[in-house]
Length: 266
Image (cartoon, rainbow, N blue to C red; front, side):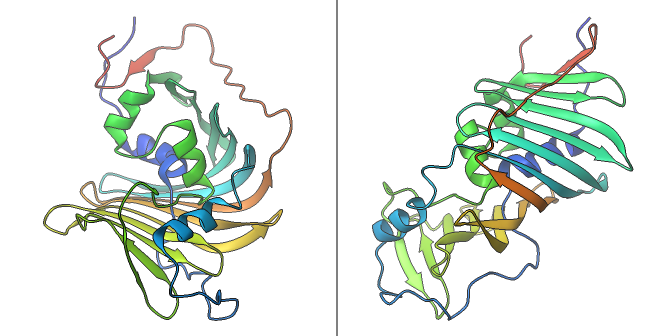
């Protein structure tokens, strides 16, 4: 019989480290004065968007090995993670600790699964339900962009553009959303979403960039949920862009009890 037990939020946050990620606590930006574009600091928001998007629209998939660190008031820990994703299809993760596989994660176009292999339970829900619970990007395209540090300000927003000697700063008209952009790599190095009172609700930070197949990719990505006092950091150890024949094997034993996400009506 399917269970409606409470969901262990740490595991969910750990999963979303790879879904919503961004940056590194205290990590150094790849920005420097060398290689600064000649037009800096006079690019428009539309030009900044095009320069960010221009290098990445052909990427379709990746696989990587990483270390994931999670901190929250309830529990903290570090895991090994293997990640595979197709840009418009599925995200697959395998997490282990001390040589033992603890969980597998699969996010498809419309469904969200986490198999706790230690306790042989499977968390099940729709992507919309996971989005509601996690308050982080979960859909395939959003997850892909956040995993690889490819997020960019929407061209439909009338951004206020500012700059200092190193970076651009784009702020929404409401002042609730800001992007910090490194014009050397043309990458977002920090995204922040604020409350009406100016308190930070969510941060994504991207750091320690490395050029892989001609594309600048952050080697550390961090997600911070300030109200939950939760942080998840992903540090890549190896990465392969556009691999062929990705496998998304899940291998859940028959009869595995299911735990539905709290918002599910099943």
